[in-house]
Length: 472
Image (cartoon, rainbow, N blue to C red; front, side, top):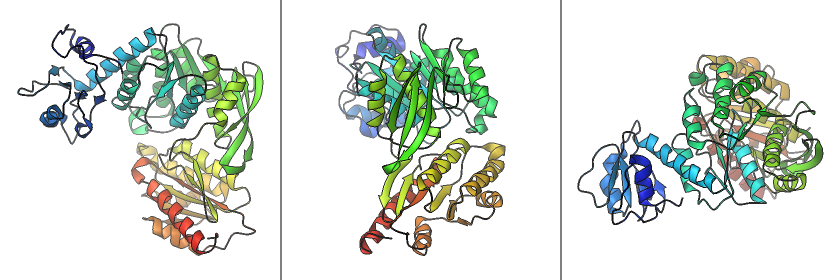
């Protein structure tokens, strides 16, 4: 960010300030008092369990350039900018910086969807970054606090920003859309997630497509055509929205999965505006064709050639805990532990089956959260997905183990509460045949902390392999 204290005060209060520090540049914007260093701008946010106003004195003593608060804070060493709502003020400042960036010719891209939006954001940002300077969200900082902080962390020297928007309630997208106001909005997909807040699939489609309403005049929208409810809402939100598909080869932007490659990679055919080419991605499976089509379409709209798109995708890496592949002894461990909903869970399980081929497949799964009244039915449906891929074992952490087992006929679903139980069961399984590795998928909702299983299994299986001379 390249804003002075005068810029901040003018943006948040409308007052022109010519104080002694008004020309000083803000070093960084912080919401964590522990991270403040001299020159930072601190926003006092309020949460259910904290009120950052209580740490204002500590922040001032740490050398903050100014503090944004919702009440007067007398006696501090730094200026206090008083606003009605500090969270909304954070968003206003991000929008102010976004507009200044756009005025200099920068392009702002926004990505949303039920499953895979962080993966697409990363693939898109990394592909673009192969030809021009890019900024992106840190990890999945994509809500009303994380998105503004991501925008404000950009230097402004980039040519493009790639930001994801995550929602759980109907009003969320309008709030985020006002902040990001994209030049290009990408709506990836929809599925039954966050139903406690969004109601049903139609509600999810309407909420996700709402991003398209916030596209800047003259900007573009790109939406998946493979979900009828989403495509209908997308066309209503932004007439002239462009479509991409992993099913319709006549779509303007299309991709299909061709074959699995070593190391968990995949070969895809991609078509952009009638031009076909091959691209290798750091993942395999039919559902990644949707990601490839979205990324290729967005990059093409920003002027990249097919060769540049293919090269960028080939050099991209997936973010942590999102279908990341690692070998550990007799197993290929796929860490997809970051989060889960019915759409992403089904896709990950099917992709893991594809990777395994004829080798053993083991699933280590956790509950899918925030499904409201649909939760039991969704987990019964998960059992049917599990049954279809024929894993040799399923280990399940969570309250819906019985619902999963009810539909996974013929498959043993073992409830677990810690990784050591999985390790003990794996140790009793037959040794691999001819050195062929099995595939072990770890996935569940964020609150299940399935990353603890991934970490423990990778370490345990690797240590066992080392002890046994390379096999476990």
